[in-house]
Image (cartoon, rainbow, N blue to C red; front, side):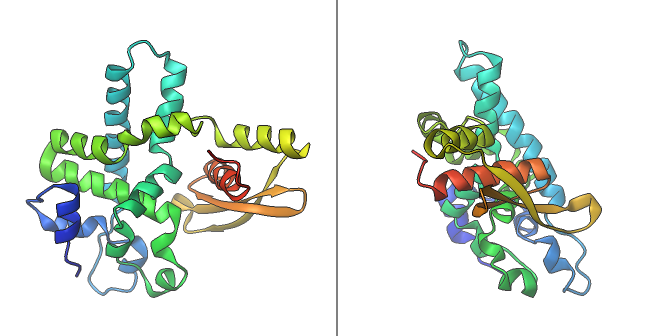
Length: 230
């Protein structure tokens, strides 16, 4: 098992129940290869997702009293979307602590955006169960909400597909389209991979729990790939 000392020091949190912390990093693929191991991090991820949305909503409501609901919704979406969470996860080096199957390991699972985003949500769930709302709120504020100014400045709160289409039409006089490249996992927990195309050229790929989410992530990656971000 991993030593979490450096991670806990980085996030300034002491966990009372380290088993919760360990569980946050057990990917479902790992369970399939371990006799007697039944639990993985998806329930914690489910909880963490809800806590993250609540904390983010509360933060925006309290700190931006003159901002309309539609804009707050866009900001919240940008803060909690997989692409942003994956970046935060990379900054915290969470991929290092993941327990993955051999197949997922060999396919670069530690760097897959959707896995990194999910493990961050699982960590939030573990912190919430172990230390409560106040400590979890501080963690989310310190590592996720602090990026809001940058998100607004770069226009990352604008719907990625709309932004990519606007840029492609303005710069290349063409409209991008999306193609399903793959879908993996059981029916109740699929991961879709969509390709963002300009003409016949694949610009970028995106992953998500729905085709729509995967298209959104593909569009965001395509903007970066074309050097149109920032």
